[in-house]
Image (cartoon, rainbow, N blue to C red; front, side, top):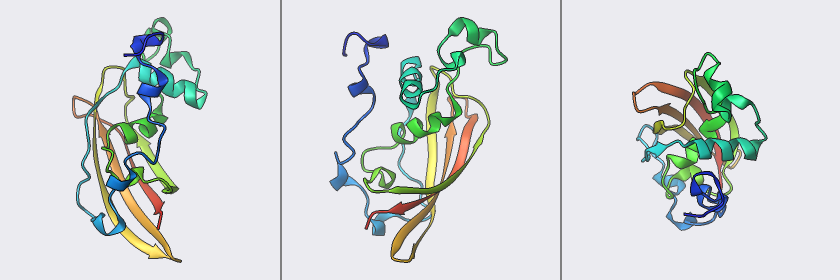
Length: 166
């Protein structure tokens, strides 16, 4: 582990920055099967990952960093920001997942937030493509995603639309 960062995790170790890495492993258009579950991985959310995510998006509310303050809130402790699902989407999917393809464009999304994720939660993703279609020579995929914690409580769920690279 790298030294000098909280928990011994360097930014380079925490987030992959080479989006083309493993691109040859990713599923092609014909491999996306609507209704079939996507392969996912469990992910343990750490305080350090929350802090690094918040830093990267400019989030500075103390409920995400300050344990003393967070204990005084209705949550009774540290939580992750609702938008943490962005980090979770990549943390819970393997390198060959079609959502990780460089050039994929977010064409829209709708999310519902149920309970906050917390440091130490073991996050599980259930995800699938719902539909795929071609419109104006663009490849669209409609997909749904549900994130659960270790108690099988739904953290958040969403539906998205992406345009795939040709």
